[in-house]
Amino acid sequence: MNGNIIQRGSAYGEDNKVLEDARPYSSYKSVIKKNHPLMIMVRSEREDLLAILNHQSTETQVAYSGTLLLLPNLIVYLVYLIFISGFALTVPSPITVVTDDLT
Image: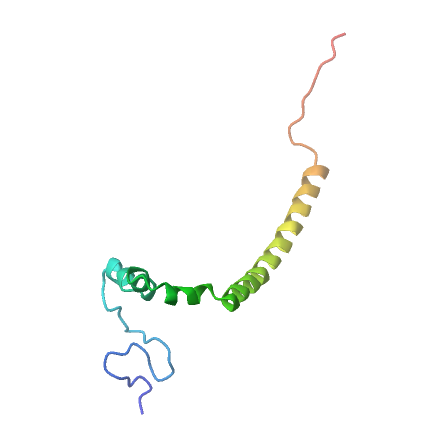
């Protein structure tokens, strides 16, 4: 049986991946943005639903994953900073000033 048999209107195959020939429901980005679930909640003033985004476990997870992403970048930056500082301190300047002492 063909693996791309899908239900009518679905953009996903049996393997739950987006099909190559899938198209958005609108070609206008403003329509897609207007119909985004978060935009609908804001327009509807459903603060109780928006509060889910501020849940403590969500904040903890974001903070933890942010730390995991920032720490390796900080280490790489510090190593780069050490090497560039060492290079700048040890390599003589290519511009030399020659002074003739006439006295």
